[in-house]
Image (cartoon, rainbow, N blue to C red; front, side, top):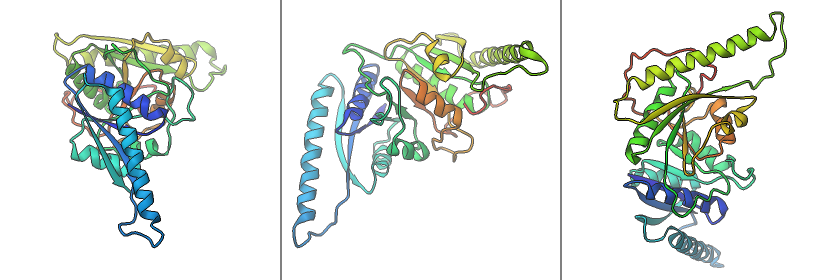
Length: 310
């Protein structure tokens, strides 16, 4: 497996390195650490400004890569590359293609709350164009030096679209030889006010959603062999953050979510619910492109879900 880490000289880059290092320690993984430099003109100006700027960028890249190399250490297989491109997104996509990366690891924007992920301009572009899964690292992510990936959790809605994320989560857990957990999130984003039928009817609907989710989980788990270690459950809360925080998380765990049906096939595109999960998750989130290979039974029935975009 080859995981591409987007390297920047700020804290977000260090967070992505920390996650990449932890994942590499957790399986047969080679890291490709990539820093993208802006393109400069191919010919020098009369004042040699372009040449001086190019030299400055080269020194900056060398210093940043040297720090990354020291941070990663020798216990992890890693390659360090720099690329010139018009945009960071273009450079990372090109590097991912050239290295046949299985996923891309990115850090959070600096304006995000500590312990959560904030989507910056580069991440936003990557989430609309990446052909492989994108792993989003919470701000300030710093697992212990001996941390390993302990489990993969999949946000599972029971819809046909969420089966792509389910299949990817199964593959990820098998590659790293760790257990899998299916979790359906039941969230009342919009405050349920009394209607003519009252609160009892509202609670009945929520209970039916939960029952449908549990039935969908049973059907999904039935497609797996007995030697897969899997658990399933439903988490609920007043909002997405409450629902996610109600779950017990292990150090180093990741959460897998799917892409919206509105995005192009084989590209990542977040729907509204997935976006809320990304911003609320206390653990790194693996976003799976829509249209990725699905090896589950195609005739498996889908159920109505409270979160159809997952």
